Image 1 (cartoon, rainbow, N blue to C red):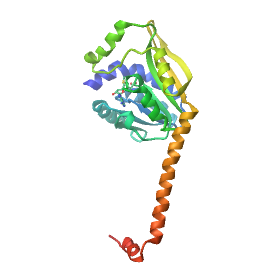
Image 2: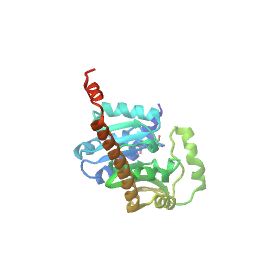
Image 3: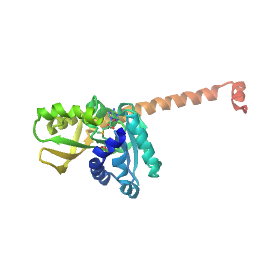
Image 4: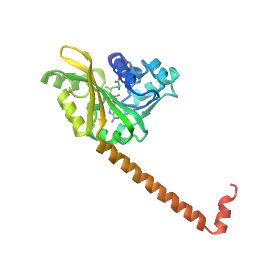
Length: 244
Ligand SMILES: C[S@@+](CC[C@H](N)C(=O)[O-])C[C@H]1O[C@@H](n2cnc3c(N)ncnc32)[C@H](O)[C@@H]1O
């Protein structure tokens, strides 16, 4: 029931947002979809996913949505191309990804800056961040009060009302540079926008240094293991070779 409400209210609109992103990522891209929901918006772009050979890992913390998503992906015959997981973005350690996409999910996270800091480490060297989001044009205290209440009526978390200046400030704090900022659709009081961003070089360098430290650590472990193997008494070596 919750998934049906969700599909009726959200997916038709966000399918167009996903199309904009799928159109921009490189051919053969590996994408992380943060907050994949029921996956309907993504599945509406099945043909583009296939023709552009795109693979998607989707994470979401809502079990009902992830179960619906898994079923829909299997029914569409795309289980080898779309992998939904019940997991918070903060716990995800997959990748590396060409693109990390937040569709209507970034500003409802408890720490958007923390999410950025985490996912930057999951990007490939030229990987990019994509955001699609509704922005109110003018300050609206009424909408600020109403939007959180929509959850009670629809069961969907729409997060807080978002203003573009606050959103861009959050990206700034997360050390990313906006490289594209376009309107997908403009309405009287709000716009739906796509924003593409690159992590600042310093962030990428830190992430790759951390990776190098891990690899160095792994290398040292391997060397230690090899030294142990060489110095091991013959009896132990023979024991290791015994069939079970
Ligand atoms: C408004 S919905 C958008 C769904 C979909 N991306 C779309 O555009 O149709 C936001 C989604 O983010 C998910 N979400 C919230 N917190 C999350 C977290 N920490 N990690 C992953 N997903 C999260 C919610 O469960 C919800 O499914």
